[in-house]
Image (cartoon, rainbow, N blue to C red; front, side):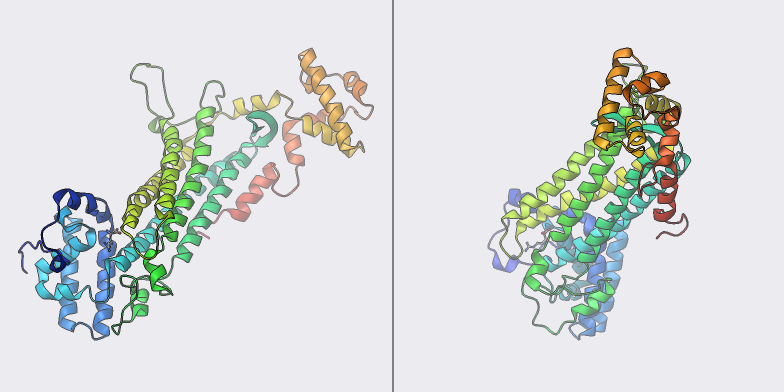
Length: 466
Ligand code: ARG
């Protein structure tokens, strides 16, 4: 196989001199789009097979192309491949190397193809793989949440609104809230994958090919269920990336909220959780410190993923049809968001699995602050008092307790009766947090039975998946 280093650009014929070196560096994308190499090779293999079956290249050409691509794949895997920025992008790097290795047959590979449909295809293949990886990471985080929710279905904690103690809820219910968010995230990634399931290859630069090609064959080989219905849309559509980035951004916002809670809960003010040492770091000056850095970084990285979405939205905003070089700017945000989201999901799963919940502190916190005020209101409403009136009676009771420095449980039967004759001695049962949680029978309500029901209904079985 030839080893001569080739430098000629394919468009050399049209140009007089060489490129300005600063322009060469400015336009080159190979430093980041090399991440597409394996997909570029996969695509080229399928494209070459299609060209051969349509009689556009010979069997011998195909054999050489396939073996050359295979050699390039191994060179890349072993780190021996020399990516050269003067060759601009990953596509030209692979094609040039192919020419070095197999000679003239390499020049036939680009028949009926442009880098515009090539890069659109590579990016779809990349996003398809990334979506798979992220979905697996989501399932991992859900498994962790489900396991902890099952463990803590009966444990009481204060549920908050406005970050003020509101009503007692099972810790398992709180954890399952994130389970459902992640379920919708998985749905968003699946929707994105389903919508981008059309092969752009065959669209050429923008107008498709006049050669007797068979893009459906390439689509089947690359696992797409359809070919793109419009060549101009095919090369200029980046919706699939915007959808992917948007799914990443929403998912990261969920993780950020969850991590924000862990950060709060780990303060000595809350003392609700202790995160494993392996997921925390110390301070270079304060020997006593154990900081929730992983949780903080997940929260921090959500900003960067949202930034990636915004960056591509703005890049696409003013672009006329069809391909424009601006679109090269789609890669770094997409790659970064894919990597960041997958990594954050995996680490979040570790946080969940390793968290030591201080259920005693949670239960204690649920006992003060009138978290049972709604239960008391329900008690009166059940005995026929209009809800608004019950709300006002209990409101006055709260005022009384605050003034007297008491909780509801400290009040005597007489004190209760002074606020309404409807209060009987059974009122104490209404005040107990566990009993109150147990009474919540409405669908999705915060009760231990509901946590178990959610796990049963929504959590896929451990061995299989849904
Ligand atoms: N590196 C380019 C990109 O990522 C590949 C497509 C180049 N096409 C072109 N007409 N210059 O968008």
